[in-house]
Image 1 (cartoon, rainbow, N blue to C red):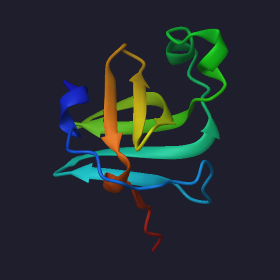
Image 2 (image 1 turned 30 degrees about the vertical axis):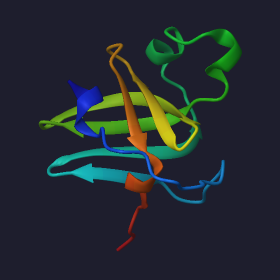
Image 3 (image 1 turned 180 degrees about the vertical axis):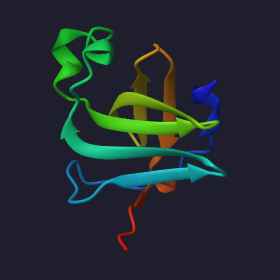
Image 4 (image 1 turned 135 degrees about the vertical axis):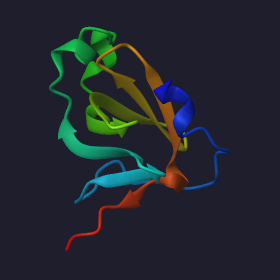
Length: 102
């Protein structure tokens, strides 16, 4: 289950609502990439309340070698994700790191 992969204790960490580059959380070979682009996944958007759908941003994940599309938003000190298959997850903000460019 994707929701369990990145569960850890929340840390006090303030994150700006917008960022210039993708943020990545990794655990072994699994990863989640958060973008500042608007969520465009119709499958995810159909699962969200219309009033909050505009707050969600695009995300992608790789779990056990499989790729998933998702959308996310900050809720307190964590990123809350909703995946196209209906799964949900939470990533503490302190687990998110800027993507390193080559």
